[in-house]
Length: 376
Image 1 (spheres, helix red, strand yellow):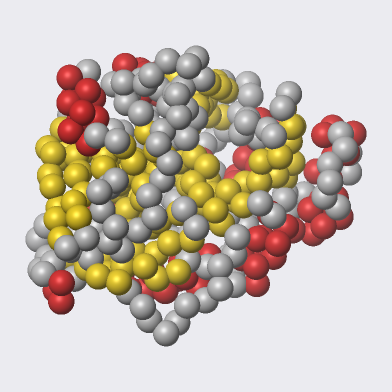
Image 2: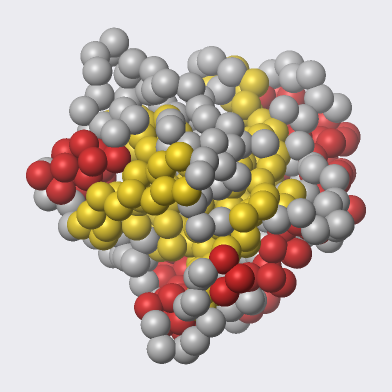
């Protein structure tokens, strides 16, 4: 498996006590990993990478690993009903369990974070095979979500020890997804500042953007959000909490259906959002739509952009600008029957922000979906 570059210094030029390479992988607990892998391959263009199951010595679970460029998803299913994975699925549905972060020293990452107050999920564990060694350690974060620290500089196997290469004949083409841009967590009422404090004090992150209920509100609902980033900017975690509104917000709906706090959406980057969205739509991925009037004065609001606005309007792609450039983004509908997890496709052209100018149009689109479900 290809290794990543050494973590860069943080923005101030000082050394992080928790240097991160970026997102190593994201693990989902799902009811049927084989079918989930087929869906993400077919709909999103992921490629088969690795497998672990009874044939490889894993007696209580099966995992399929899929990859598209630097994005690695692990889809894990329990083989029996009486275990923690089955309990997680029963409570939350198919959901993100682990956001794994690449580190230079897993032992040090665990020691640094637990010494600062993190609850341990996994003490240092070494996995070995003929391809080398991978060291893992982990901590709990909001809800049942965990961060796994992955040290893999001395490993050249397909994924992790215990996995074998998965090479089925069915390998659909990729769709242009490149890497994880950010992962968004939804937390409960008055929980945002608690978890902002956790990422600041336990992991050394900084709050780089804040949005209150005036920034993120519609006629009916509101939420608040703060964006946390590690020192080199490779890992970003926006954290949302509900705010008072006339009706139920998207965060409240998520908390109800998810059964607590958890990962709301994963933003993945592309270099050509128009081409990527066309491919995804052709494969059956459904996106939220904003009214066509959103595009009427887009050029006046955003300024000059390279893309054809008529094409953006046709596909439902949103645009926003900050001091450093602009970005294009679009959001899928929930990818499961529970209205919980969804994906964002994002293309950055200099912008480092998160689409503040699109919040109202986006959340009104989400509210239309909530109303159809009877949950607004």
